Image 1 (cartoon, helix red, strand yellow):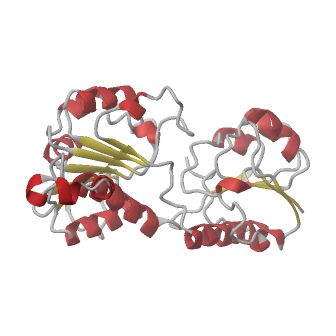
Image 2 (cartoon, helix red, strand yellow):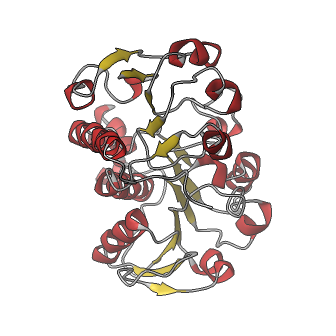
Image 3 (cartoon, rainbow, N blue to C red):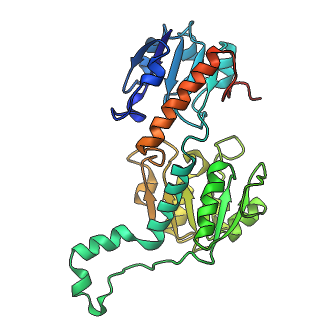
Length: 318
């Protein structure tokens, strides 16, 4: 079996072992693959693994042997599933590998906005703690979360886990989701009420035709001026221009983002210059043990496929 990893560096810059996948055949590992080289690199592949590459009709038509494609990710919006079905290619994702890590990052973004630990540390190192009258060095308000409302859009595993942490911080939890989960610790409300009531709105849904741009000019206008938006899900959920305008004009207070609509972020993305906007580089899933588990679970997907099982098949949906 010929196996290709198209963008290995994004998952494994050298600190974990590819052996769980290499055990299945001849493995070709590419740190990065430009879009124009995907077809050439998968032309003889039986199985392909990728994290960020986009594959569709053009790429699949150049890979007649390809029968298995696995994403090193939960989301699979980069893959044309209809084209995969036309070419009889099984497509798998890896759900659940980063639940705790992404929930942790969600709260980390929130706490950095509310507690400003990075900024306070920087000001202390300038000497302001000892030089400022009254021994106070804050230039912006610090925010207590106890008693405030934590809203969750999308109550899957990550949304539920983030909600539990927020609840432990003393927050009231509400949510809205396509499917209601018995394990959700909060109260379900309408989408409109979620935007209206949330002091913190945390996004945890997939990017679908129904959810793309769900955070837009109108939905932002319905939020509290003191509200904080957190997005560790998909950049496509948010209209970047609308969010930038809302932040700069005080429609909402702040945003913490781990994802944007084009990644890597473009230099001209207006969010880079937005007021009170904290951005991390899609890093929530990067702890070493999380990435190692991701590789193990992706290898399990391939093993399942080779034994005619349908573990984590997403091409069968719809």
